[in-house]
Length: 477
Image (cartoon, rainbow, N blue to C red):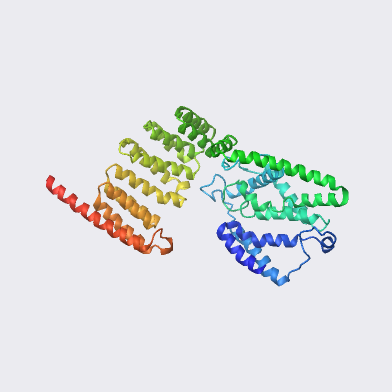
């Protein structure tokens, strides 16, 4: 037990952060053991009458559990803008999660073929105790369940199983459903949490079989297994078709920008752009706060060389009033990559630079390290395409410093060199060398020998290109 808790907690935490809950979950199980007389009388009870020494419990259960609670307490930040990249603050998250926990319980106990899946970014946020109206009842209901579990634990022999089911479920959600700034809703958070959730029903069937009627217990068990098997078969049929599954999720989530973005992309990929644009525009009217929908709309216009200056201006005007979305940043990257093509219109590249100016000025984007690295990189690529290598070198040098990764740095050197600007590429190679010298070897994607050879090869090639360029210039003069 000592080895499994110590090593298991560390390994679990490195696999997924809420693995640190292992000592707390073990403590819940230990606390919810049935009374000794109940264990003696019922051979089916899944616990043994073992009482670990209190000092062992203090070291391996109490102190780690207390450390988890203290760490969560340090996460408390009730400021109105605690998470600039989220559409909710901490208070709103704490008000919303009780409603979500009830929904988790409902879907666990009421079988269905499929849920809403991965498109959960449209979940309605609780802004106060009465908005929506189910917020306060949900909060009071969760507190009532917790008090019921504590109260019933020793009041009835089977109360320990109810207490274990409820307390284990809520303890499992302590990280993912409280003060940490994760997204609000994901069904996979119930995988571990539901481990004991059906134990009270199992014990009830055992009690019916032993005290009342074995036929009733077997019939109830067989009916349940048959129904669940049928629903599982139906679910596997749906999951076997990835496109149908994602479309199902998207249709089931009309208030999810990601879901509606997915449906629109399906129209574009199926050769029906007019329906795709119509879908995006209708979704944007319902969800004007979505930067993802705006960026996808502009991306599709750029891909077809249909974007006008008014279209770019429309996106720039809306961005300050929209939420940060990592997929919107990805959309901006795709727009820039499209505009690097030789047949792209020069005016579109200038318009894209203006959008980057707006994004860089917004606090919700500046708060994200990914965007802070990506912004000078995208700007540098656009400047290369515009034929402004000196300005591009300044931006890409900044990007190299922010990425702090030699692989990314050499990619930028290659961009500049392939564009026909060897002098500026040599400047970037010097910046890449500095990053390489400071980068820990364990973070390298390839061996040091490979990087040493590649840097030397690039240096010689760029020197040759620079000499050739100088000769051509003299010849022209």
